[in-house]
Length: 358
Image (cartoon, rainbow, N blue to C red):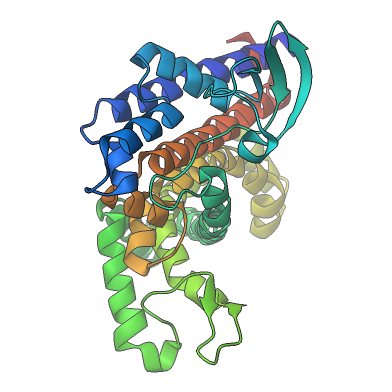
């Protein structure tokens, strides 16, 4: 078991290293001058050179990549002999604490340093921490909505196969997978946030926290979560409906279910105590993977509903060519995706020993 867990962790590490490499080289070949963007078009040459030196942009690309990996690493090396060195450690810049000093280099334990925004000069770590909560709340709400409603519709469709409920559920599931999220979001916002706003009391746009018009500060606006959560949950809901239905039909045709029926157990007992538990296994497997995808796929939904999460921040950063924010957000989403899938793989190995053999 330990060997299996070690293999999965090693696999996740190399996947993250690959993502970091692709993100770094992709964004560093794009045209543009970060120093001029930070200082403005009227900046003098000396100021631009100073900014390039501070950002490490005057170094060859392989050196820049090594410095970037050093910034991201939780255990990093920092020069102590050169005061002007870009890698000189300060608690204000990097955080963390110095572990020991070896030959003019400090070994530092710290959180990954995602550098600073070109536009606001704010730490990317702080920008992402402010927006990650809203995206996480949105993704969790969407997956809970999709799971509970999807399993219910799927099970009912299987029990009442070929009925009007089954046909409507399948039609809804097919439509949900075919329609893009941004289109579904526009329709839902227009119908429930505009046409029926007097009845629903919902807004077309809004975030988790809103500023009070009377100047009393921010307040929690949970009603703004309803429409974007439904929109984001439509696609996984469609998948879960079909998956639950097919899984339930397969379980209902197996011998142990027929044996339970032959013993005289009622239909409800057979479904709830015998069939349902076995039918939910593949559904829970799919849901665990969907959550990570929702974190990455929330961009369009956040833009449509002006939900100020990571997706909203990424789009704004792209418009301003603020590459550290974009790179940091992509890496955070990649880490979440890899970690969730790694945990799921390990849980599979614990629950099903056959997985460890493969």
